[in-house]
Each structure stands twice: as structure tokens, then as C-alpha cells.
Amino acid sequence: MRQLSLGKYAGTAEGDRLLGAAMALSPQTSADAMALTIPLVYAALFANAKISINPKSLALSAPSSGTLKNLVADGATDSMFVCLESIRDEGSRVFLTCDKGGHENFVKIISWYGKKEGRVMTFNR
Image (cartoon, rainbow, N blue to C red; front, top):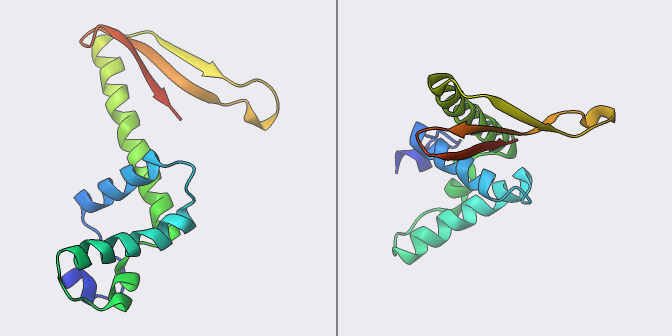
């Protein structure tokens, strides 16, 4: 319960990864909307467990939209390093799928053949 008494978000590495994953699993949800939703989910969890808490402390201890955006970026970075290790360790050839033209001329999908998995692996931006 120490997290609730700090008056600001102070996440753990595991909690940060889980929140980043939640954001990544719902890309259509804005960081602002998720920042409003997370304290409600916390409140529902405590209410269902019949644990009395101060709702204001939940709101203050939840991550801001900026923090959530950073957690998504951190998760994407972690994922890219895992992919890089797989590609490098297996000496795989990499294929890039890109959009053409304008400022959208960026890699959209990175794919390679994973020898351990025996299938084509992908990393979507």
C-alpha cells in the first residue's frame, strides 16, 4: 500500500511492463483515455476485494499519459532487442516491408525465418 501514499506514480519494473503491455494490446485507446481508465480498474479491484481505499490516492498513484507512452516505447525497445538476438544468433536474413512515399516511408514490418521456431517471425511497429 506504500504506492498509494506517495502521491505520485512509482511503478515497479514488473508493473511498468504489464502496463506497457496493456497499452500495446489496445492501440486504439489513447494514452489520455488509459490514464483515466487505470485508476477506475484499480478502484474496481479494491472494491471487489472489499479493501477500503481513498479514491484520490488511486488517482494520484496512477501513471500519467506521458508515463504510459514511455512504457509503450520501453516495451517496444525490449521486444526489438529480443528480435535482434534471435536474428543475430540464427544468422537469419531480414525482410523489410515498407510504405512508399512521403513521410510515411518507414519500415512497417520486419520479418525473418526463425530456425528454432520453424516459421516466419515478424515484428510490427
